[in-house]
Image 1 (cartoon, rainbow, N blue to C red):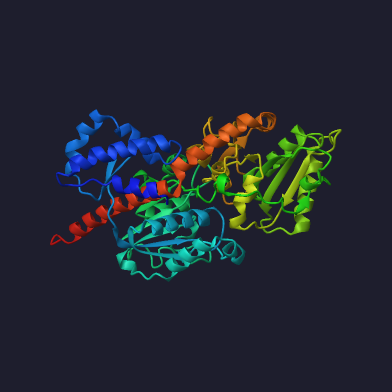
Image 2 (cartoon, one colour):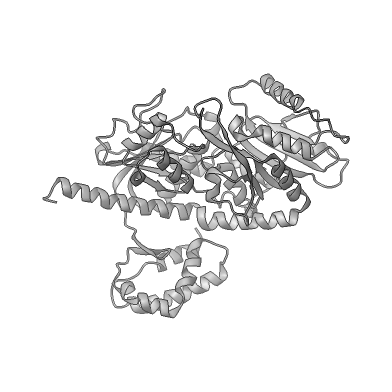
Length: 502
């Protein structure tokens, strides 16, 4: 944390004695100057400019003087930022990789850095451990997680957060550590943190959600879909996901060498495209290989829009999702044959596939080498690679539906329109509806970004600014602390009701 960040945090505290009048005017002047210097930084400085009007300050002066020093002004709302006096048990797939894993890690590392939770313990839950994922984590993250794994708490004095899909909650529907560990009666409070990628939640999962005291979801999209599905509206709380805007910062990252992997359709590796003196325009897509990710729409649109004559490459980082290399290659080749589109006169455009794990520490460098991120997904709970790409100032072309609508705008991205909604034909979401991204608009937007790189870079810069001001770990941690303060008051009210002597 920079020195002026620490100062800003300090000056946002207000004394309750008469000296508070003098301190108030001094800190307003200082904070206004800080805003002038750092207009592109965190949201707190934008809020400060709004308060720099003297008539506003005079209006709030009585409350400023009387407010205890532990109370903060946060976006015009006063909330009490005192240590959370109960224990917090956070159960999630910390060692597994994937969306839930990265989200949970960002939450607990932020809380640990804030030092506002009296006791915080984490436990692996909801998925299998991955040694490959663990080895790829930054050393500081490993140290923090190990210390939190070793922490000891008493369940009966704890708030338990079950951070996984509801099928893993107590009692689990598959082999997994149950969460809450002993059921719903022993902990002080139980929270389910989850999300879905379709237009609804399965009835069994609705029942599981309603057994929790609260359900934390990442977007307004989920608040609405969960409510329509039958989850009690009073239990739903929106808590957005964080993206590490310091780790994913293009100013601090060097480009990776393009990793070797598997060239499709006999196209050349980008490093071998020496016929062109210019670096090829790199489209990047990162996803788990499954129908929901819209890989077929991505390949169809790219292969129909570009040819070998274009100085362009599509770089796909994926995993095989329980398929062997041979099965994977056969699937791709069979799909291209089924398209029944003639090979362009200049040959197929370059497509390069990396069907293996890239360590977390190398991901910023991978984003750095790209010119545009593209993912025509049918639906996302949040879209971790999307916000990582946006934090790295990449323009993104992503389906304008589901979790992505929480952070995508016409100014910071290229929202991909829909051709409508389609029914999920198989799998656990069978019968649900999800988005059908427009193939025609995908082609149009990819060509637009390719042809207008300067305009695309401008949107990428806006994207990074939005990630820093709205979804950085500091901003999201403040929101979680605010939720914990609210829960603490609710627990105290429960205790008073149960024991009038208190």
